[in-house]
Length: 182
Image 1 (tube, one colour):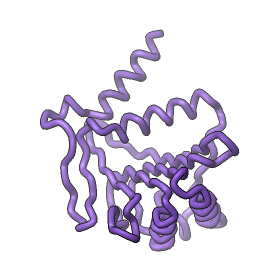
Image 2 (cartoon, rainbow, N blue to C red; image 1 turned 120 degrees about the horizontal axis):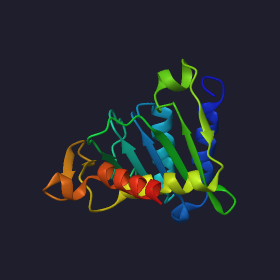
Image 3 (cartoon, rainbow, N blue to C red; image 1 turned 180 degrees about the horizontal axis):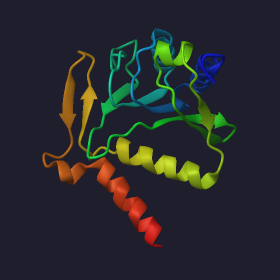
Image 4 (cartoon, one colour; image 1 turned 90 degrees about the horizontal axis):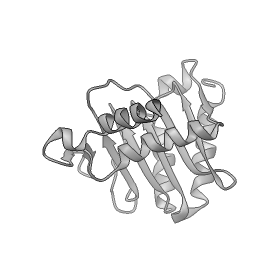
């Protein structure tokens, strides 16, 4: 819980993932990433070889793909029909052999980590972990429409020319609807 120990716990989890080098993988789906300490920790993880995928809807102060600094970091922004506010973090080596998922209210901003009451809690139920894995898989797919942040701080559109051919949110919506019918 922020402001007490959320920052410290997140930094510890990033450092733990860094100990796995190239086998490490961090995925964070947030609205904003502006906190300098979190940016530095993610860059150190990248330098240790960890793959870092960031799904940032709004402000991102981390410049990905900079050789020797953040070359293992990819930043995407996905906008669509639904205004998403979910915050999901996945650490590949969070709990022994199982990935650790966190969900909560906290963006990685100084105001959220230091001056507000915010939470991120572990997701324990296997069904819920599977759902979160599916959400992240849709948004990290190579054939979706997104904007990717480059090392030059410019956003570039990626994916199919026709938005509906690569709409990650629509894919997830259809996936959920199909599961609900079963």
